[in-house]
Length: 461
Image (cartoon, rainbow, N blue to C red):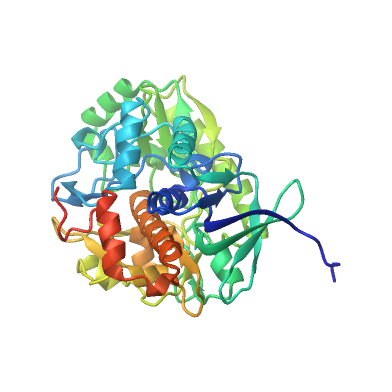
């Protein structure tokens, strides 16, 4: 038994956002612009979450899909291409991030050449995100890891572990944007993990290869179109390297993305299965395995793939990328059928259009299921309200949904949108002295629209 500890109250605020990733950034801005005093606390020494810490780049598309043949070698999805190019369905904070990063020459605008993804510079995004918070009057604390809550049934504060000892931030409303639902779990909210057998989607360590001659690579792809079989890019080269004992991966493809730099690519091809992102021992094992896989893939690219002869692995993510952990059960559970049928809800607060995208939890293979052409699904506010807990909202990939639905809404644009909605709801709750559940949905929707969000109904594109 550990002895009791004393903690310092670091701040008291109206809205506390835990987690400075895309969802947390959206939440902090939404709450501040709704008039609330906001404190954001982040575990790393920089903002951006998986976009910066795990190098999850580019940002995936927030456009509806129009069927068209894949175009291997594009700057965006290489070789994946799900026929995007329709309407943008996530706006508000998300549009502000894209537009600002493009204007700063730190991102490429989504379009046919990028597969409607958004290639971006993760280093530039760190300072861009800080500027956004500063401009909106958000106070933030870095290097602080959430370890517990005060008053679990309706948390009025969160305990953070820091180099200065335990710190407490008290708040009227707390937003869990940790990705893992750490605060919601500590508050006693029910949650699920993985599919029925408990297995989650695998983890991947992304990395950057620089000094790539992309023109040579693109020429090779054009001369060898048979290399691209669905998502099985570089098929023959992978087969030869595997037969020679140079490549031994539990994944079926080598997936690469162009970036804002002409001699660089981001590689998303490592895969670690049967690991859980809320288990420190599993995380340790995943880091070791994925770093060794990254080294192997980099050597394969240098030795076998045209355009990579002089390239080198310049950076891996600060931490392995975790696709899935807790899904906090809310007043509504979004389903895979809701996603694929483009379901609509009266209490819509965000929209999504990314396909159901499930990486095999046990080895090779992925499942991709697109929405109908031109379709988008809606996410209700009830998915952000954990059952049995007041004064708490969730945002990002830990919102309430099934295993299948999660594989769609986990991507960055949708995470920003749910964060934005959680922040607006929290801000209105504090200004009206209401619990988040009691805030009229019409007020939430009106404020989201005022802040530029796209709820489809009444939105002027």
